[in-house]
Length: 248
View 1 (tube, one colour):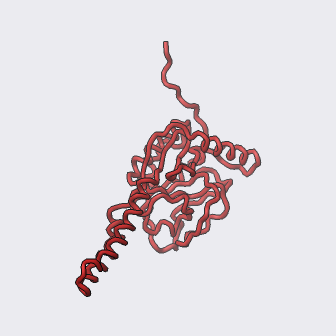
View 2 (cartoon, one colour):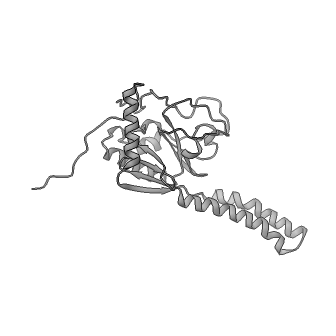
View 3 (cartoon, helix red, strand yellow):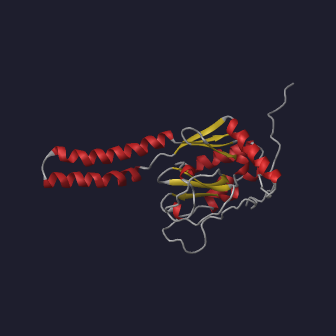
């Protein structure tokens, strides 16, 4: 007689209480997930949108047309067209290579998979959906934590190593913390959120139950250029508990 599928034991999200023991636990957790993120459950790519590519190429097309009008020589138009198409191809290829992978124990980002986010450190209460336009004026995410250039984005908070953050868009300084923001250009936001929720539940993180519906229904933001008013995102200092309400 064989038993049914193994149900993972429920466990809380990570909450750093500021102690050396908590930091050691976090260091060990990150090392374990980096060494073995578990089976790959879903893959998403931060492909640029058609609108972004059109906006990128169109000025070069107009320059090429103007060049033909001013000097009717076909070769003159080739240079701006080649620059525009070449720039678009760079974004297309980068989007195809820049993978966002959901694993059983963590998220793995980038072509080389050098960035990992243990699922236990992701706060379901700090997951949002947004558009890319003006997003970096409100969420201070380092270049290495940003996967995507335009279109739909998923904004989430989790463990983050020290990364170079020029913050040229002027987002509020989040201060020093073991947690940080990630901007993930998963074009199908619902599919990504459902995959993330399933992975977290599969790891016994019951606080993630309802993550996808809750995020889509109540945590959709629309950034603007203005930065006044209430912050769009609630940051997380090292000892802040998850907004999902479960503490370690």
